[in-house]
Every structure is written in structure tokens, then in C-alpha cells.
Length: 396
Image (cartoon, rainbow, N blue to C red):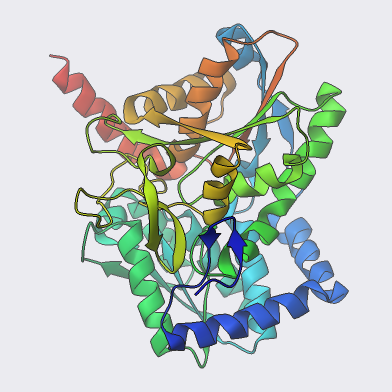
């Protein structure tokens, strides 16, 4: 069933019990948007709990290293809990409260959405369960412990690839069984309507702030805005404020994993096809027989076989273009940003950092690239260390 579309993408491809729950969520969301007190409460928590607004930072050392355009970062890593995810969890939990729900369930990949959900649930006194793929739990042990410290129950998902896609499946199934008192807090701009629209709405603050800040600092709009894309929530939040600015190029950076030609990647926009996944019509990486393919990335937050339907639409109409960075390129960019600017980014973000450096080298020093620094890299330190050790061993 198609209820709202981004071109031919979006919709609600779900069984009747889920559709009933979605209609309830949509009605509450539309009422909340029209209520100034809801927006005021949301903005209050963004300021006083999340710590917004966060700055835009001119990475002069990195820009000088690249030798071309000036690179600026929107510092979502400075939010409480260390990533952009908290913008959305605060908004959705306020909506859940408005609906009279007392329990929260969510999925997580890299764990940042899980941590942000557990954080908001703790603050608002709500019971919380997070579903995470067993492989992602191993890769992100620090975030698993953080979620548990915050009082959430973390449930490992052992089916399929044991990653984000399987965690989404499990969370949706559990939601159907608990609809009466439970709210499903979806973490990315994916899934059936109204979730892509809701997630975009609660992340629009990224672009609103960034547009004003870059005009103030650089004295003009950037030539390029850029963000990493898995499901695509941080990117869609940044992109919203620039969609009408025809002079601004919009670029999303996916995970090329071990290479686009290896089959071990998560480059949905570059290698995917139209498909239905998790209740939406979008693009997804498919097998030769048309099934949803197992995907791979060093990043637990980017190894998702689909993408938000608005991203598929933006590519279709030519408003945004999508590229990819490999594991090696992302790791090298993570180390470079750490050593040049004293900022350790999330491995997800590092994919965009790599391409920003590459693109900057083809531009002039009076031009500007604005990158969404979607999260900090504390959670990735163990994984990066293991990756570097393995790469060093292979070199001998």
C-alpha cells in the first residue's frame, strides 16, 4: 500500500496489524507537529539536555593537507551521547509519551541509536528494550554495556547476517505483539510511512543550524554538503536545509566495504535495485535471484542493505549524488582527521571524511565543503585497533 511517496519510493508495505499501529503513530505525529507546546518541549530538551546548538568547525589543518577547498564539519559528535541520533530519540519519545505509551523498543546497528534511545528512555522513566544483531554486539561491546548501564535490555538477534537488517526485522515483529503499550522508536530515515518523515523532521535541526552557521563563518553557502549514508538519517537532516539551493551540490557517501566489485559492500545507491524492504519501497542490494543480499562494512552503522526512500528519490531526480568509500579508505581518513585536527570521528563519518578530502583536492581554496560529522569514534577504537593489527599482519 502506498500512503505517501518520494516519487515512486516510500509507502506502507506491511500487514494489517502493523498498518493499524502506523496509523495511530501518524495521527499522533500530525497532531504533535501542529501543537506549539510539543515543539517548544522538543526544543527545550535539545538545548538543555542534548546541548544544542553544536558548532560548525573550520578544519584548517585538514584543508591545508588536502590542498584545495576549505573543509568544515557540523559537529554532531558533540551532542550528548556522542552522535546525531539523540535528536530523533528525544522527539520520538516525547511523541510516545503523548500517545500514552510506557515501553520503548528499538533496533540498533553501531549502537549509537540504542544508546540514545536508552538515554532518553531513562530520562523519561520508560521501559526500554534494544534489539541488536549478535555480530554488531561483538563489534560494539562498549555501546552494549552503555545501553545496559542506562537500564535498557539488549537482546541479541542471531538470525540472518546478525546485523542491523535482522535487528530491524526482529524489532518490528516484537512491536506487533506489544502495540498496546509499546512504541517502536526507529532510528533511521527508513521503514514504512510515517517513519522516514518523522526521522527527517526530528533531524532537520542539523541542517537548520548548519546553514545559518556556514553563512556566518564562510560568508556564503558551501559548494558541497556531504554526509555518510547507511539508512540515511544524519544525511537527510543536513540535506533538508539545502535542497532549494541550486548552487549547492549534495553528496552522500556509502560503504564500499572491501570493494564495489567484491560483493562485500553496502553501497545501496550505487549497486542496488528497486525493492521492498522493511515496509517501504526503496533501493536495496539484491542477490542474483532477487532476494535481499547480505551486505558488509567495517561500520556496523552502514551495513544496511536498503536506504531511506527520500535518498532514493533525491538520486532519481538528480538532486543528490552518491559515492562510496572502502574500509581501508575510511580507516585511513579516521586516522588522518584524528591526527590533523584532534577529532576522532565515528567510522561511519570517516567514509564521508575520505571523500571530502578527495573532492577538496579537485577544488579551489575559495570553495567550501560542509561535512556532517555524525558521531565520535570512542565506540570504534577496539574495532579500528583490530583492523589495523590485521592489516599490518597481512603486509608481512
